[in-house]
Image 1 (tube, rainbow, N blue to C red):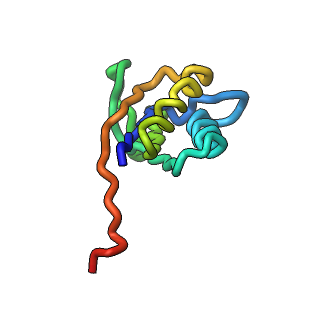
Image 2 (cartoon, rainbow, N blue to C red):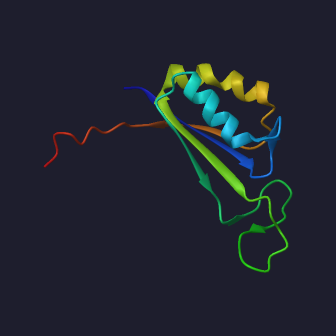
Length: 107
């Protein structure tokens, strides 16, 4: 199967109508019938601002990165991209080809 992994990186404080942006992306992916979506929280990193964000105690920085990862057929993932534009996603968006493995027959 020709599949793609879509990764969308947004800030944990990014909002759409008082709802976390990552939550809105997941719900829209669900409504679009995509196979699944997972949100992962980054514990430390930096981006365009070059400011380090961390979850370590005593850190003054919040706004950790949230990664929304979606894997499905390439055409379904590409059809979902306009939803990200509608939401005004300004974070990093990547597409990578992936190989889906069925382990059902592996002992």
